[in-house]
Length: 142
Length: 286
Image: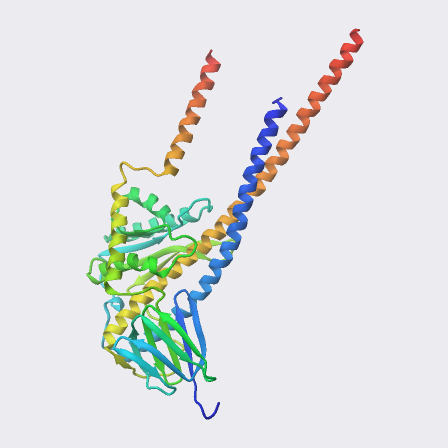
């Protein structure tokens, strides 16, 4: 399309590609406020907050994508949205980190007393083999 | 000569075991394919991320983010990804062996080591060593999600930022092909030279709010995506290893059944012969 310039949009997340194609305009929820990007926008780099990315394709269709946050890179002919699949916020991250730490501590505490089912089973098999051996020895003697 | 009944029940038990191993093999095969697809899906994100970070560091040579600065290695953190379940051949054993080599190497250089464990098999193994375990997550299942890894990775990144760690490594099983998975050690932090080839154009961006904040957010996500890729690759390797191990087990069960069948037939034949000769002997006596 010569008269209506388009811009290449790629929306990718760590778990897969969400959208790739030309667009007439892109809206994104930047940290500092929502952005609308036309083709030939100045190079821009910003972080996104949770919200909706809207892509208007050249034939007037509109696609909506939810992002949990992420980063937005704008080059004159290309827009790249690096989307987070998870909802990100400082306190949510903090809580997740804390939980990971706690799990590690608990695992270390359990070292002495607690044994897993697999270990217990292995122990049982060993004990049974010993018993069998003892029985066999008894038979041989008796 | 053992009784035919015992042999028959033994054959039945081996057959049912074979059914299980065959089923596990098939399940692992389909799960491996799906995991491989997810590996492919994760690739463009990491690639684009590397490009953006490359642009950014190129445009701001004077700002050095702590993740890009190499410090004296006084303490080393290792993220070990292992499986949650067994019956996957020597996969976990190989990962642990590689990890121990790495730990010994750094301990030899006089560095402190601490661990971050993803997967329950790693936890049971490394608990015995008495090394500090900073974070742990297990039970990710066959479809690990980034959101399950964020907290665990954050613990390590925070430790690195605070200067408690000077190096961060990732150990996981690398999926070479269906038959081969080898343990692979990768340095996550500090980030070694980023692949900035393929950057033809150079420009500076408008930053909102500032370059430092954006770079920090990007680098953090980059590391997370690396760990996510490791976790997905580990799942693919686990499934491939299990597929091969269960295939071998099914073959062995088949061989065992054949052997037992032969013994059973012989025993049966012997019993018949014996009975016949008894009858003939009895008839002759009369």
